[in-house]
Image 1 (spheres, helix red, strand yellow):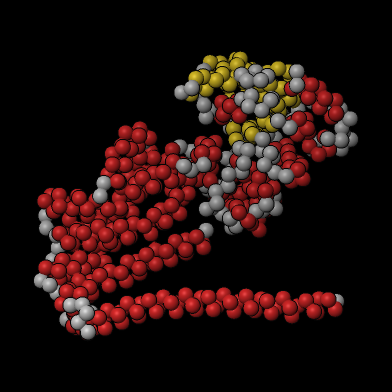
Image 2 (image 1 turned 90 degrees about the horizontal axis):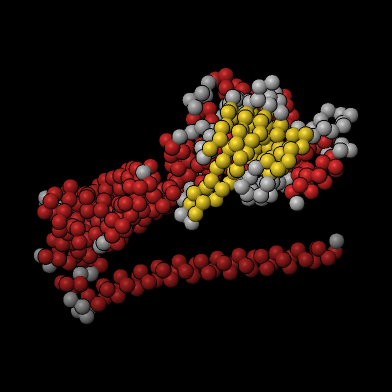
Length: 272
Length: 246
């Protein structure tokens, strides 16, 4: 008895020490992250003010802020952001639907999958940016081109990933459906699709970023609105404030979209 | 009495890119109503192939398989689907056949109640013990009201104690429903305790090497557990052991 009364406070202290140390470490990391951000922004601003860099071509945080306030006031900022988000989401949803559907067809018809495999591999490894100029010629200087550009960015890897997930499902589970008298359709419905949902969801997280890349490339080439358009327009008329502002917004946008899908994935795994 | 199942000179050969492997050769046997047949053979001798042939999952190269009963097939593992509740798992076969009627749902609930799974009806398979999972898998098979059950080493994934209990449970269920069964196993004791007749197979390609009719003297009602106490049990074991090791 007496031994344990001595032991408890000792172990408690080490526990507290451990927790305090962990907390200090966490605070240090958050602090350093903030410091780097402030250091860059501050350094940038000071360098511009002291004419160490030319703020006409490098812009500066306050200039960016001014442009942002001005564009927010005439609502054009939200218009451009809205266009880019809209195009990204449309191509993202198209990739989800088309990718899942085509992977299902390939699963259904193994020989088609075998025949098409080298073509898919080539299309997947091709830098999709090379396709953008062709898309403009074929589809015209409009939003259709931009959305297709976003789709081509992610669709091939989606098909390959999902098809691989489909064919690697435990073959005993397929046998189960057969022993219960089920057909291929039942295997698809009761085994393949439900078993692949986690693969589909984790694929979404990658796709949202890829679609955004595709949409921005599309906007570079064929647009009169959107953040990609704003970057190209700004660089052409030497309004680097536009360019920098768009890039910063894109950083934030990409992070929000990714976190959103990471949240969806987490919710899905918590439920299952 | 008409047999439920009649195999005559069945042959089956697996074809692969590397070559062909004869798995079943001139195999003949019958299964009668209310009869439990055990199939024992050296590992890899083609026991599971025989069940696949009977279930119609693969077609024999030659010979005849006459089946005159609905067949239920229980695999080695329970294969309950993680993304469905226990209730949905056991009605999987019914849904595949579009036979999920309110009466069948009531029957499922009764079965869950009877085999101690009612509190877990809405649980996921992961929350159940090995024995409970196997019982759920059995109910899933029985839901399609088969007259004959194919059991492919259904207890081999369970620990020894659970194995004895589940074996007793399944035996009672099958007897009470007046079903026939084919039990494929490599466990001699399990086969003797469970079956009315045992056929010992040769090495691959499988054919019948010897048939044993099991007659046990018991003062209580027969269950697989009680059967192990019978005086003849040891003798059957030694004889079958001898056949397997010649």
